[in-house]
Length: 593
Image (cartoon, rainbow, N blue to C red; front, top):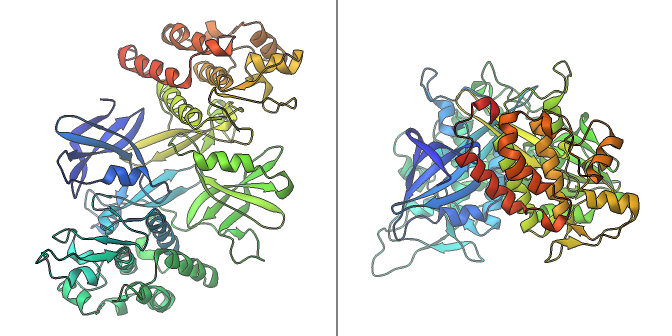
């Protein structure tokens, strides 16, 4: 098995299995073990179809004779751990976003679930996770829905048939479930809808507003839900109650599911509340910690003329600039994001189409796109740094100083992401260290670093043979071009574009990492281009001897073959790296891995 986990480090227990701390492809993960049996959870099937920043990520699954093992994104805590006593060993002491942003993130995630025609059925605080990503300046926190073990597919009207018994914690169930006469008698079928999730989400909102108490009391909760008596509503802080009770909570807590608002209406209502009110008060001070940064900095709206825009941009926080676009920090539905801004006349429809096809942990995620009269805006997953910033001088203010994965794990993640890109009949075409991003998550117990492919502005779709028509105006970073592209550019040699050019560029990146920031073919643009054309990687001998022994013949030379058709594919690169990690690096000191 490629999954490793420690049965002594249990993170939690869910409806159909236990969750342990583990590792997969060089990253720390959560591993859920499920007993293989007929009629058990279809959680994996559900998770494979969901792709949203506010839903826990599914990475992989395997099985043996007795168990199925599901590899999931590792988070820092569950929402209930926020309200444990201060001396409790499992209490979450990290930051939490503003209340309005927690609500927006949760409702956005739920709206995505319902849009894919699924019902969650298990919404409660311990199935909501907190994921913290530390940056140089602050901590960015994302709230995620988890545990899809009770989830089911729904029909076009959002309805599904119940089992013979009601599953789940009754204190977090909608009244239409609690009022059913269960178990079913006389083969009677009970049908309910996705609005049960909306009611449960309102209970979670109340739980947060009340600092960890249930909206329907501490005892006789089920009775109070059935009788429509949220006895703790009046205990909510008056300012927050004025904001949320009439506009949101009562609409979500409707006894009749037909009158209850939908998840998409919850998102719209919250967006309206955020726009119309100043929710930056300290009303949630009971949630903050001395070491936390709970409030997002104020963000300027992209266009004050449009009430429909959902992306907010921080114009005073630029992240980068290229020939065709600028990138800023921003906010989308309560999540910190990177916002790529492109002038309308330079809009790249192909880039957007390609990114919408890609769904992989090692590929940057496109979350949303929209436009105004001047610009097209892309909300992208926010990362910590690009790969080149790892090798800046120690006194450079832009140097990345966060956690770093082992070299083998950087290579595995990059190869895995590139294989996914190629499997979707796409080629990247602009592989270089600046277009590779580092996403780090850190907390007191676990650390996770993910390497991601970014910038698909030059990407193209390819045919069944992996080729495409190469135009004369070649763009990109010339010192990271494959020899066939340089020959086409400098000597006019005819050539059809090929995914194998990505493989050569990937080998250059591997060499760059092995050489701690030096190029495999030289130090100047002229020298590099000339040496690539003449098949002379002059810096190969500078790679540490032990590392070179493992990578030169087994991998690099096979990726750097002059003829594209003779290079190994991204799938073979991934297999070779897996083999290197398993068979050859086990005895190496960690420094060399």
